[in-house]
Image (cartoon, rainbow, N blue to C red):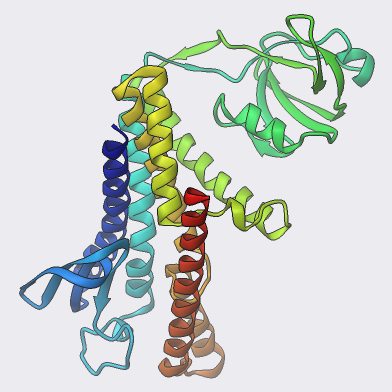
Length: 359
């Protein structure tokens, strides 16, 4: 059964790349830009067919893809070249790929939540006996988590995530009580008594598991959207941890690591709830990956969509102040260098993934 999950993970990864490139492709066609090649995958060509002015290709390595537009890599004289389009057309084309990934993530979540009957509410069931002694205040049963250390609580699952991020430090908490927001500062991390009488280190807040709201069509769409926003935040927090040294190389994953993680998630879900639960787990991971791809591609790094958008903004500022654009050869050189560095980094992460699998 593991091979089924591996194939499903590879298929999902390929679909997400295809959707991203399809966003660029559709926006380019909409804006009248000539597309020379639309490819899924990188490396040697497996299959290729030319229709109209565009060559459509499948390539051997399922680690990316591209939409090669006229004038993207050189200074073309074609009036339909990308670089000869206005600011907003180019902006739309570069932003369309990440936006398609974001939309895909949302739609996957909407399908997953389509069969739900109710959603858990992030409510408080009570506090430990020592809570008021340590904090001088108390929380009430039925209070709703609103934010933890300044981070909004969107979903029930956010509570554990955000409390763990603040582990060991004083806690700033905002709750909703009767429609009013109540702000508690510096709640103590200490030894508390759990619901079963056990001693543990934490914040002494008991989470309710039986408070729910009906899963109407509107609440399903809202939950899918909030989950999408939640995934964006996870990427932001992960990048923050990476740059502050709280996460390292061993915490990164490339295509091999992603497929491995999706396969493992599928196998664990099947053991707990059968094949249907396994596929739901894989597609939930796919939604997270789709949003991850959207956010990462919008980072202002050369060769990524965010890097192209940054150059557009630099050009706009240069035109406003100096009445001329940055020479195309400089932008092309920087993008090429960025692409080489990015591919090198992907290879490094992929080798690291392989070593983790065989180690």
